[in-house]
Amino acid sequence: MRYDSARKTCRLKNGFTLIELLVVLSIIAMLLTVSLPNYFHGIDVAKDTTLVENLRITRETIDKFYGDTGQYPDSLEQLVEKHYLHGLPVDPITDSDKSWILEAPPAGGHGKVYNLHSGAAGNDRLGQAYLDL
Image (cartoon, rainbow, N blue to C red; front, top):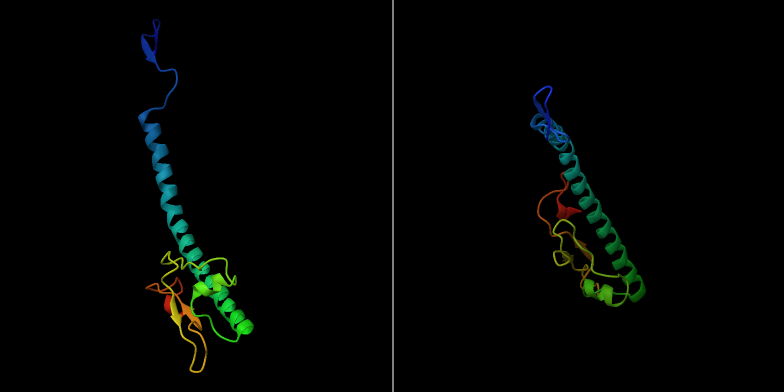
């Protein structure tokens, strides 16, 4: 602070008043109120898209395995062991590679994994059950 003897007032060199800080904080709060719902919606869209893509790629890989060996794999781990996949696919909704629901092949098919579905509860953003994707 500097004291001005001619005017007998105190002046601050640098800084903001409480009102200025409150105005800035209220502007930031308004911007967050508008942008955060879009951000979380974007995360949900990305998870749904990733789930659909993981299902598509894994189903194609199961078909390729069947085409090469004449039987379906006994587990998803077998696809990784035989280098058809780099790693087990992750269900982005449950954030786990253990929540997949495996479907056995139709009667007369050899192996144990014909198809897979997400084990997540609930529906995607379009209202379709995760189990039905």
